[in-house]
Length: 101
Image (cartoon, rainbow, N blue to C red; front, side, top):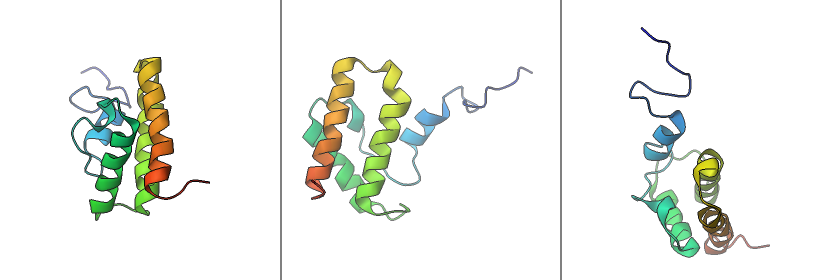
């Protein structure tokens, strides 16, 4: 039997994809990170974070952590334009949570 790479589960999926799809912290809306509107992405993450009863931190921190996690893990596979949409979603997330500085 071939050794399994530590970043893959039994189905051959990377652990980061598994976390994004089956997070213990947030139940994400389908396709949340695939959108092209930073505000819609932020609002979706806000809804998910506020509904979650399993998260370990405040809704803002949970939502921002999931967004950052996705950007960091999917980053090399994202187009520059889509990565920018997700980076802009961070600013929108700060706005929808009233965390603008």
